[in-house]
Structure formats: C-alpha cells, structure tokens
Image (cartoon, rainbow, N blue to C red; front, side, top):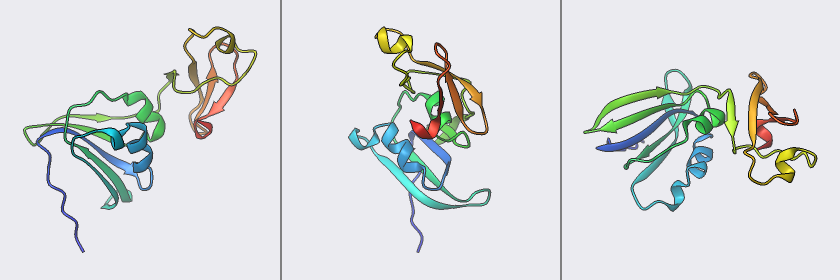
Length: 144
C-alpha cells in the first residue's frame, strides 16, 4: 500500500529524521496546536537510513534550528516556496545551547538569580554531554 502526500506550495519540510524521532520534533515545535496543514510521515522508506520520518509544514514558521540539531543532527530542513526548495539547511550538534537545558544544581547561580540564562556548552559530542557555563554541572541531552 502506498500513501501519497502532496507537495507543499510554501512552508518547511523537515527531512531525514531518524525513524521514531518525528514525534519528538512534532511535539517540540507544538505542531499539535497549529491551525495550518502539517503532515507527520513515519517510517518512510529511505535509501540512506532504511526508514525515516518526515514533517511537512504548509506555512512559514520561525524554528530554532539549534534545538532541532540537539534532537537529531542528521535532519535536513528544506524551505519551500512556489513548490520548490528555496533553501536547504543541514543541522549539526550545537556547540552552545541557551535556555533549552535547565541547570538542576541548587548551588548554581542560575538557581538563585532568576534572570540569568541557562547556558550549556558542548563537552562530549559522542555522548551529547553539555556542561553548565557557570557551575560545570554535566548533563546529557537524553536527561532533558
């Protein structure tokens, strides 16, 4: 059985999402709350990945690509206009993330001062470990 999803005229296609991670991206972007057309395609056949997830968004949206790189750096973002790709963006693991991970160390200055941003710097790329800029507390992205 084949499922057909039409191309979009203007919007964003998030492609090459690891199979099963599409729902994470969908939830992070809050796509369940929007009133325009969105398609989440799970387990689509892929020559490179065997299976992949794809999200098609029929609308312009501001997306934090840094966070998407944290969720899955293998994704590609295609910006669509007039049914063709206007721009293709490849993601990578961000070296710095701000206000995505919250430091849980009660002695950290971010726990005392409420207006200080939670800044984490990449410490170990393979394990996806980040270190708090202020107190050196280590977090892995899977803890988030």
